[in-house]
Length: 306
Ligand SMILES: NC(=O)c1ccc[n+]([C@@H]2O[C@H](COP(=O)([O-])OP(=O)(O)OC[C@H]3O[C@@H](n4cnc5c(N)ncnc54)[C@H](OP(=O)(O)O)[C@@H]3O)[C@@H](O)[C@H]2O)c1
Image (cartoon, rainbow, N blue to C red; front, top):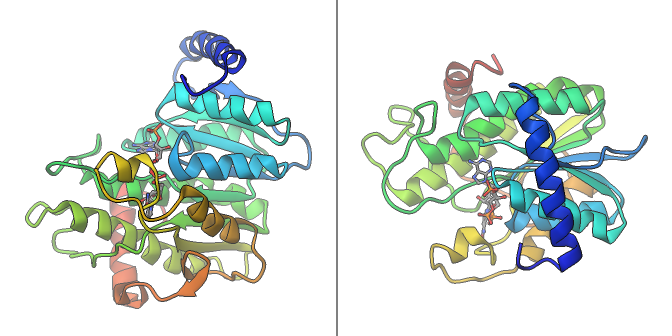
């Protein structure tokens, strides 16, 4: 909170106190922790992982042009700060929901809260992601953690929100993938044998792209489009700086790439974009057998999309 002016810091603190009492009274149901509802007719954009990094900058840009943003992440304080930053601009609006995407129960509860609180959803941006240091980790549901947070959670969230996206058409799904793409070994998708950080991250990012292409076929003619994007290489976000990697581009570059798919005309559906350029992904993304294998695996693991 140190980065915020005093007035904003106080507002965040008050909001958090109110939110904690509301949350404890709210049994199992997930409540918005902070923020304001949309006004009638306002476009609603859900950006997962918008408490920091790329997602936060995109959330602020969207609000700056008058949209309502569903802000999401695990960190309640940073989420409330983003909501206050939106309020301080006097443009658009935002509400924050806390959920750990490393748990399918939390993904389902998050989706249920969005369905309960929003009569429409114009854009879903599956942006939340991790690049983890150290050895292999598993999610609450027992899956390799990159695969779970970066891919499976977005897969499940998309299907949980698809009826809302369909009824709000024309609507869009944007998958924030990466140029780091590694083929999935369907005999060892959880990397129980050949674990490596780059491999785990890369296969989770390619899985997002394969899913987007497969989903685009399913959604043909519905008015719901889906695209995947490499936002920019080595942006100045926590993901990069906390691992000591060299920064090569700004988060504003990455935000331009996302805004192109959120707002751009003629971006179509089922595409992979390298920043704003329509591009070619790893060959496995176009392999129908791989698409079917990933779908079967994802249905089995999440129970959604069958
Ligand atoms: N940085 C790059 O150069 C780069 C390049 C290519 C692609 N990308 C992709 O761009 C996306 C954004 O990355 P970034 O660089 O902005 O990363 P970041 O600064 O680390 O931000 C990640 C965001 O995801 C949220 N998040 C992480 N784990 C979560 C979990 N288990 N549950 C819920 N939310 C979670 C974080 O919020 P909390 O901490 O509050 O949970 C945060 O808001 C990622 O998908 C990444 O793979 C980044």
